[in-house]
Image (cartoon, rainbow, N blue to C red; front, side):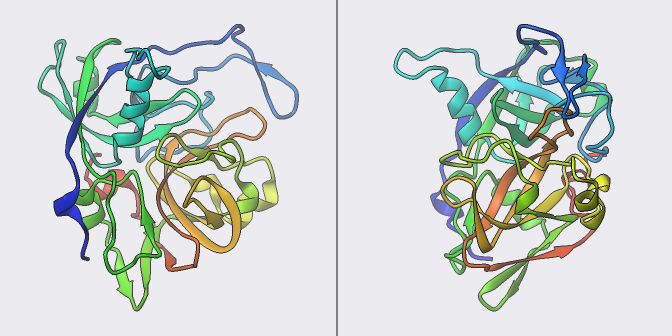
Length: 292
């Protein structure tokens, strides 16, 4: 597949391992009105990684592996450095620990989480045991600006070219056949709609309608799954548009809060239906990169 890889800039971004946080109250109000206290975003999540189920944890928006943020402030832009970390980091980028007991160890970027604006990185369990909150992780960000030269109606974002090469994508005339584990309808999509771009963050698959969950087998979603959002155009934000197709990766777990669910970080989109998603149970970053 021809790309413009020779024109893409490789640039450093850095983040600290972020602490878990609670805002104002420990309680979260579920979609059926019940107050609960659960682990959420941030930290080092030792027993939840890509390849694991995205459903059913006693948790809300839990991020697999290690959560990063850049705490530097910029005088001109609020948290400008963290926004750069989010925009420029791409799924599949190598992440290197540059401080602390795990210095020199390597992991891989697996997604981005909006609202909290974290970049998520997978490390082995052995490496995570050496990490502590505040350790610095360097990412040589590579992928922003990637184009598929023979498929101008398919936009690519948040994707390292090396990950693109192992996704087993098939060229079929003017269309691309992309392996995914699940389809999801645009009607199920919630938090994250209305953004003006998809280079940072994610948006959520709501799982509150049992018939929709069963129809699309969403109860089997795993962290790191590649999924197809049907009738969804992500060219300039996230909108409903018939015949559009967007492909993304499951970045965080399901949620109890109304309008939320497993988060999807966008990798491809076509507003003209030039993407054909094809079911493949192995279309998960943990399998493709042999992370587990």
